[in-house]
Length: 333
Image (cartoon, rainbow, N blue to C red; front, top):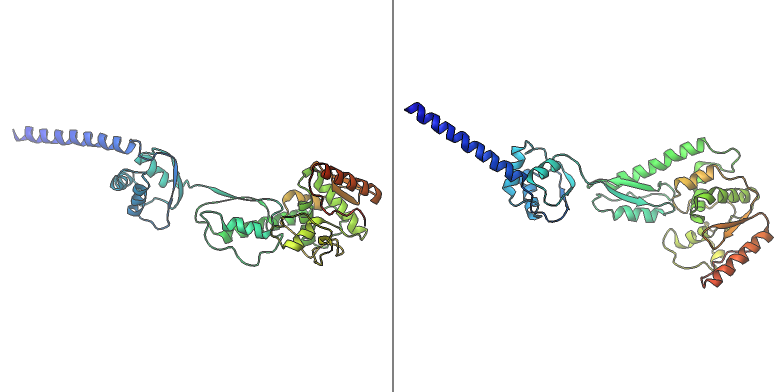
């Protein structure tokens, strides 16, 4: 009799256990309460209880204790990883535990376009959500390689600056080694300066090498570069300019004003991109000494001053017909 009672109790416990396990399986697989896909950040050093409370506060779980139990049941009570996670709408307890223990954090991006100044690049990095620390002081114009950079929540701003500087250094080493012969450049630094001017003069890939070739011709002929972007940089010092250049601006006594100074300015006027740098190290072979905007997004190139003056007159006529301001591009040397 006792054996039968014991067997019956054991069977009952097993049935209850199986039923309980099935109920628990249903609970951890049940869609969660989160109505829309959202992100959550797990701070470094946060314990399971703190994480569970945060999930409950964000309506990602119904009850914090159920999440804690699910984490222990699934073997991840001690290995939830810090970082930013994207949680899909209605994620189950199992989905959440697996996600937060996977380390599959959100990858963010910060875009530094070609031709941005250091001031602009540093501002973008400073405003990048989720990054920590300050940007270092003493960043020089032209040191940062424009590109799209990835980071995760908690990454240091200083480390991104190191990455950007390293990218520029490595690119310059390769391009300097493979440069065309006979270029009037004393150092890679001078190449960056010229590339920054090319970058600001044209955004067209098919024109950069030609613009570089014109500037080399002018340097060799000891002609002033007469580049409007250098005037703007001297006036705005890397900030926003916001108006059309005047003839008085062209006479502004700045070391960056290539209407006033001979040769290259003392340093870059922006951070040039890869294409502009490649154009400077491999310029087009041309006899042109002048170029001016053609009114259609490109430039008209000329070998002689007379031809250049005609191109300038044509450009000014187009701008007037469109009712647009005419920049103070000089038609005479």
